[in-house]
Length: 405
Ligand SMILES: Cc1ncc(COP(=O)(O)O)c(C=O)c1O
Image 1 (cartoon, rainbow, N blue to C red):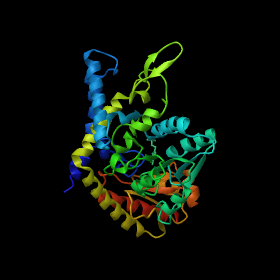
Image 2: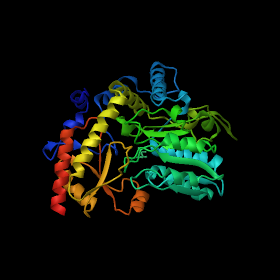
Image 3: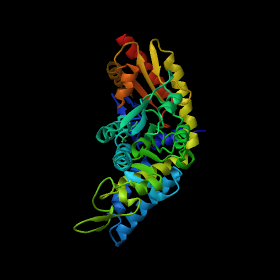
Image 4: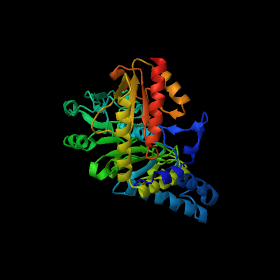
């Protein structure tokens, strides 16, 4: 039995009333809510441990440093990385991708080279590559989609040439919910000795991740989409790449020795962590991972799969509703449109029924252009959602449909 009542009690915000009715929160792909365990880890840090890390010999500094470095090990184990120094703390997925685009780009991408991404990427895993390719006069190529919103793997193979320097794809689409066959994609790229970056922003909270089993060269994710605070995220990179890549930002922490004429850089992971880090965020992320671990990722995945299939069946019963993203391998995200109703108009009515969904392009404007739609209405589920809440989503969507058709 999935302990849903106990879990819901851990998330104070779920008791919130919106327009005098209980909130039904289905905007989890944008950000998840935070359990008390995470909130307490943050307040506990400020009440008892706050100090700058790595720089002091006094008690508090040592304590805070130990907690921060312990969190790095917890994250290493969570994604099954080989070394803790392959875990780099960033502000989130966006900063992690920017770090690789900038640093890997400077070192390994030259005029005429090629990078492959897909048409379903979030702007965070799109614009950094586009801009880097423009700056370095390289070409960005796009993996197209099949009808069901999965990647066209046959087309991907034809995009690989001797000029390809990197492949970068999302593990799970934040719009279509498609779970991409990243292990297969990585194996194909590795046959040509091409490294692969996986955007894990939508996957880490929903499934077990094993970066060694995937053989990913880079894997990025954000704390706030996995029940941890905003402003903290992770770049996992294989030691061999991180060793070769130049620092991304310059400043304190990332140096070994500074002279008037030159600087030598710190070892991994500090080479990529310039400045005072987000210690509270790191400790919040550690608490979130422990929380997920206590419930069990397999249990979470099974529970969310059940929610997805229940919601899909019920939504498909609504006249004129079309779901975008119907792959067999899907995470708990449903994007849909009602007739020709604009998603914003529908979203306004759904909101008035105390149901939070997201409407718009979901930071995937190229995908919207590809699908020739203005945007979608998106309901994304977390393990604290219930079928009763999904019934309320249904009612709200039906009402919007009736009022606007
Ligand atoms: C697939 C995907 N990649 C990247 C991001 C960017 O994450 P962040 O804004 O936390 O850096 C998101 C956020 O929605 C996402 O869904």
